[in-house]
Image (cartoon, rainbow, N blue to C red; front, side):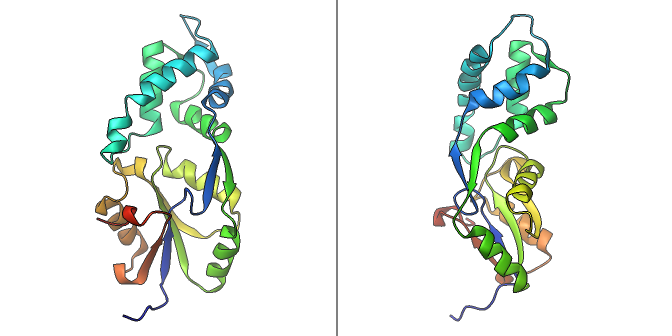
Length: 195
């Protein structure tokens, strides 16, 4: 079988374009804490972090079975249980948390590769397992790779299913307007290719 030049490359984000260098839940909580307007039980940042760990851990079986619960849903449950109210929307809270946590760095030569692909007229996009929305992931990627020309960014939380679910890949194919044979998928784990 002879390889032909793809018309599009769809990338994974984590460990392919970016690395999550440090995850610090407390830093994210500290960032959104000033926006709390009602905290009847006077929860501290440390106490919210404890509940965050416990409640978010209850979603582990979903991920183990390749389902993705959006971050906004997890935050809604946490805040409703703790009776916390905010001066900003849940989406804004998620964005603030995403900006502060995690610390992200680029994978070596990823920017150079994206630049080369743009010059070679090979279209690019992203499909990634991420509990933050595709919009937030795209904003982050735009900051990290300002010259990117990603046509779309799909996060697993947008659909509720994680790679390797074939439908998330098929959604990418539909969005591209191409046939599957014209698209390459590049990621860090072979077993997360379409099943």
